[in-house]
Length: 331
Image: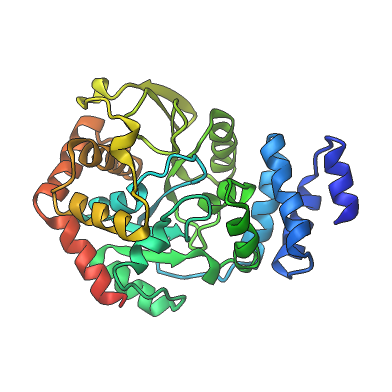
């Protein structure tokens, strides 16, 4: 690691193979927390390269615990995190809205490392017990429309760095990797990123994999469609700029999307949104993200019709019904 750190401090980048080997060593717990912290902070001072991101991803997928949920059409909805905005669990809520609209979701998530409440935090608040058992995950997918894959159960390297990430408390390159290493390798993905450079890197990787992938970024720094600013959407080789108003929404303020001060606060907001009792900003933000997930699954679906389907999923009670079934199947 000393040699690698010296190379990086000299502003040199790693090859794809070097990056792969480092992540394999991390997975094997060959570095101490001080070395890991030094390595991770390099990427706060410079951008990650495509070769580095791809090599890290190669290693995580090589060492993953694969999951076979059958030949089911399903989407992952996940953001990088690390945008520093402390939002409520927008992507996780969107998963159940999509399920309530009749689609399947294989959500890959983790505890919050740089935020108060990650997907795993908010689900645990509801009594959910995580599992790596394929049969249980399949029952959850069949019964509720959602299977949840708690990342440390499937990627040993993510478990190895959990303590160092938490102690740093800031975004690391592992935030960039999380959305790329769902162990089911879903063919449909809605991914949120915190800057435009990462949007382009994700697009290159999606093209290499030949998956249906939509990448979103709000220009004021959110790793999702926040409706707090104009936002870019990249899919199938094209980019489009939207404003909240162009989709029939009002602009939101940052404080309206706050996740509160504790996971319990975030869970209460999550419940209100799925129950149809969220504020306008909370409701619209989740609907917007769910809508882009629906258009990813069905590119022929107009964004207007997708918004209507997502809105109806909440108002009809179907989104909350799916969530209650999910909790019952996973408790």
